[in-house]
Length: 150
Length: 150
DNA sequence: TATTGTTATACTCTATAACTATA
DNA sequence: TATAGTTATAGAGTATAACAATA
Image (tube, rainbow over all chains, first blue to last red; front, side, top):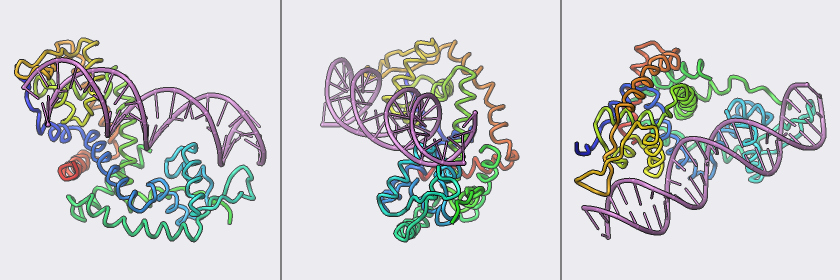
């Protein structure tokens, strides 16, 4: 039997296996996000840490990592780099001197604001195949999924 | 300022950033898939290769890799392991002697059938938070996304 | 020249274990 | 004992470059 092309097989697979569709879509989106993040000079993890700090205030590295699902051993490097860039300060938490109170600086807020400006365009191009309503639907479905799985 | 907990911050983030929700949901699902695949003895990639071969007939490693998005250098190892398990044969393609015509064996079909039996339960538990209609919605939305991004 | 399969290699992500200083 | 941060390391997953055989 000769070799067939198998073209368009993936479409059938994705229709049958939401898990596979989810993982491949995620890989594509993650790659696009990395490319977009690269332009602003902030990695995705750095961006998220800055964003969370700006939203909830000073946090320990443990809390940042738990919420953002970044391992503490990885968080060390992200905090190092953010600190070296002047975007973050590591102050000791007076209530628990083992922990840092990681704090955004003004420069960090500016870098975040600049990175945030690129987000709508990134989302629009990445999710261009979906209408606004469909995008909301997707967000809602993923939200339900996340509650149980994580 | 004392360190705050930041609990439930991720929910807000996911509601605002479908890309992040997608990537985290995917990571969770992939982990569940790996665990489920581990039980049947077939890795996820091995399972997919067997499934595609059973569905479309003998394929070259290149075609398998392109469709399943597995790099050819990785496909070598998967084909090696499937061959060593007796699930696949590598016959030379008479039409192009550079390429193999990778072919499922009977043992391969049996292993695939057994692995496939575990899939519905895996999907039901992984996507338990969604109704059947919502699961279809998700599949359809991801399908639209995949067409453009990939 | 280009392509299939192969090998070696590298890079990212993630995870684990062990250590320190604090609790 | 347990926890926060740190370091080193190891394992996946993915990607690149170079090579032999063939087209």
